[in-house]
Length: 224
Image (cartoon, rainbow, N blue to C red; front, side, top):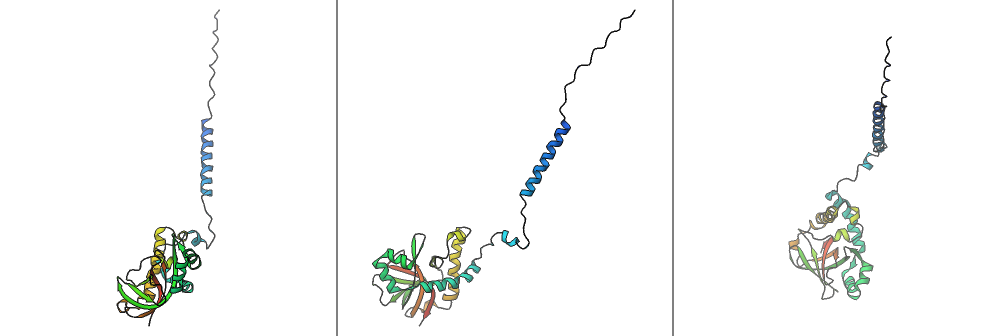
């Protein structure tokens, strides 16, 4: 009589991680994240508002000078103090004179002034002007070009500061643009070589670096 041998039970198998399902979940999550990035990074632009979000236009010196010089010219004229009166005020009390008549710029005071005087000899486009009533120790000169130095026209009104411009280059260009426009409108009709000995009425601005030496950048010059 044969004896049947019982078959051994199959060895238990380890449960396998549902890799397919896990991969699907990861892919779905990545898709959702991608959609969120696209949605959050998308800016809705109302019709007609494109120019508002495009950023400021590039600074144009010629346009700035042409548009702004008439305003600067008028404001310096309105602020201008007769030179003898201003010289007396500065000599008596520099701080009070600066507060009443000046505009602070980069630690210096810029004044607007007006005067009538006789033009003396000049060099490099800079001419001495003899003015009745001025203290003997104060020398007044005007610059007529071709190079106009300084930023008095930009600074004399207090209307322009560094924060209004993109960078230091634009800020400097603003001053140069006003100088160039002033040359076109005020100085180009004048022959500097013919100024010596002439009587002129000048309105302009200067920085009080030396209270006894004024270098005036004009905004108007009348020869009589």
